[in-house]
Image 1 (spheres, rainbow, N blue to C red):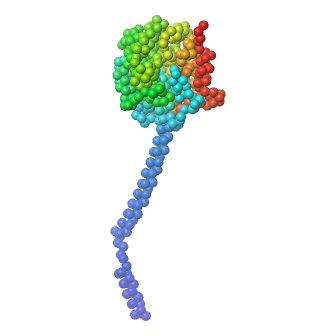
Image 2 (image 1 turned 135 degrees about the vertical axis):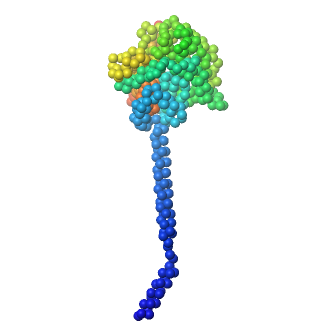
Image 3 (image 1 turned 90 degrees about the vertical axis):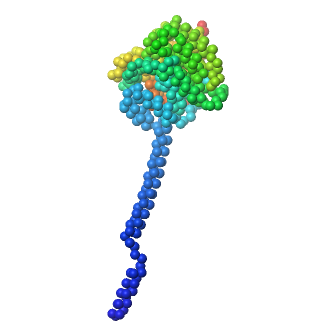
Length: 444
C-alpha cells in the first residue's frame, strides 16, 4: 500500500510538472482582450445609434412642417434676441442652405394665375424679410410661389436708428420703422447674377425665380437723401433690376421714409407711373426670361376712399400691371393691448387685416378685371387667404405671420386652404375668377 501511495503521489507530481502553466500576465491579457472586444462592440452600437439619431433628426429638422420649428425654434429665437437680430439670424440660416424645406408637392386646387403665368400656389412672401436678396432660394424652398425681395435703394443707406422693430405678441402684430436699410443696388445685383446658371438659356416657362411655378419680385425703394417728389430713384431701379425680375414693385407706401407716401397723391403719382412704365418699355427683353418685367404698385392701407378712387383712375389710364394691397399702417386699432403699441412705425399682422381687406375691396370695384390685385395684411391661415380671394385678390402675401409661426407657415396655409377649397368642391382659381368677374370695374 505504501508503495502504491508513493507511485500515485509521484504520478500526480509528474502531471503537475507537465501541465501548461498559465501565468497571471497571460490571464490579464485574455481579460483585456475580452474587455476591448466588448468596448469596441459598445462603441459600434453607440455610433450606429448616434448616426441613426442624427439622420432621423436631420429628416425631422429639414421638414418645414415639423412642430419643432413652430413651437420651439421660432419662439426661442424671438425670446432670446431682439426683433431685428432674430430677423437677421433667420435670413442667414435660409441663406446658408441649411434651412428647412417644404417636402410636399402643391395640390392642383391651389393652382394660380398671375399675368399669364401659372403658379403652383397663391402664397407669397412680402418684401421686408429678405431686404438684400440674400436668401431667395432658401425662401422658395419653403414652398412660396411668389418671393418679393427688398426694398432696395439705388445707393446703400443704413435706415433709421435702432431699435426699430418691435414685437406685439399679445396682438399677433409687429411695428417696424426700418426706413429702407439697404446694401444698395450693386450688392443685390451681384447676388442675382450669381444665381444664374452658367449656360442658361431661357424657355417659354422660365422665370427669374429659376424655379417652375414661381416668380421673383423686386421691391424698389427711394433713398432718403433723394428729392421727395422726384421719380428718378424708381426709374433707376427699373433700369437696374428689370433684367433680373419677373415683377418690379414700385413702393410708394412705406410710412418710414419721410414724404414717400406723398407720391400717392394724384399729380405726383401720375408723373411717377408715366416715368416707370416708360423706363420699363424701353428695356431689352431679359436674358433670363426673354421678357420685360411686369410693374406693380404697392399702396398704403391708410388711404381715404377718394384717394383710392383717384389711384384707380390713374391705374386704368396707365400701363401698370397690378397692385399690392397693402403696406403697413400708421393707425393703431383700439383692440391693441401689447405695451409696444405706442411705438412709432408701421403696424403689420392680424390687426391690419380688416383695413387692408376693405381697401382691396374698394380698389377692386374701381379697376378692371385685367388688373390683378395681391392681398397682403394679417394673413396667417387658409381662411384668411380665402377671404382675400373672395374680395378679388389673385394672390396673397404673408409677412408677420411668417415671423411668428416660422418656416412651416406657407405649407400650413396651403394645407388649410386646400382643405377649405375641397370642402366647397372648388379651386383657388375658380374662386378668384368668380370674385374678379363680379366685383371688378367695368366700362360705363
